Figure 1 (cartoon, rainbow, N blue to C red):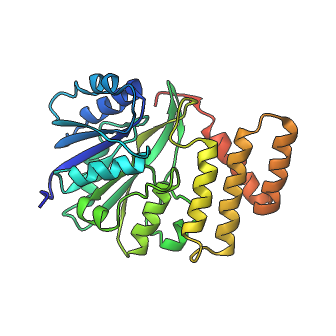
Figure 2: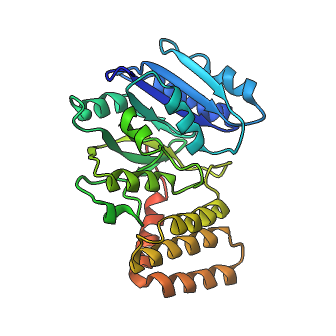
Amino acid sequence: MSPPNKVSVVVPTHNRPQLVAEAVASICAQTRSPDELIVVDDAETRADDTLGEVAGCAGVPLRYVTRTGPTGASASRNVGAEMAVGGVLAFCDDDDRWAPDYLRRAIEAMGDGAVPLVVTWSRYFDGERAAPGTSIQPGLGFDDVLATNPGITGSNIVVRRREYLAIGGFDPDLPVSNDKDFFARWLDEGLAYGVVPEELVLRRMHDGERLGTSAGRQLALRRYEEKWSSRLTRADRRHLRAMAIQAKRADTTTTWARLRCTARFLAVAGPRRFQQMREESRRRDLTYTDP
């Protein structure tokens, strides 16, 4: 049995040796050190570079694992969770970072184990630029999160390993939206969660290789809609389809194509949601502040 007071941190990575080094450095700098760090690499190239970058995490036992098969953060998280020795799991994507008090504050919020999942707020950053991120609220139910992600990412949850494995972890068939899917299944099982209302996770905004490209988001949204088809309301479907249009719009290169996507978005989601989208975009326009 995994010791309930031990914490295993799992970092999925794919061809990002420099970025994962920053993620690992933030994990090693925690005021509450993890009991082990598991880096799961699904890349066929640059594995030696990645191992070299993460090997210097002083004071935290490190396991570096390479795996074959379909790439994706979800499958890598699940592999790490299966082999973890701790009764508590924490995850950090390879392009994100944790504030020094992240793990301590999340573990404190779990209390004596009565709260099996804790989520913290996050903040966007790009170099020295930063902006407010997502701020999940307590008390949400399944219907509140099925179509709209309230602030769950692959980097801001700390969860008991027993329940994580019981619900099957992250769905590897969803390239993105797997975080929202995980939380929906969690709530559908009647499991509780807690919130730390502090921006303790730094989510990188960048133009490099990402796990969620625009084309990947469109495919994942279609898969997500198919997976939850019997549970989605009409409003849920409109929201998901509007998100798919928004993802497609991000890939357009001409003014005419963007205008057509905007018109389709307005027809599906309505002007209120379009205004919300514009406000979200402005919120992600990073202002120059220290993250």
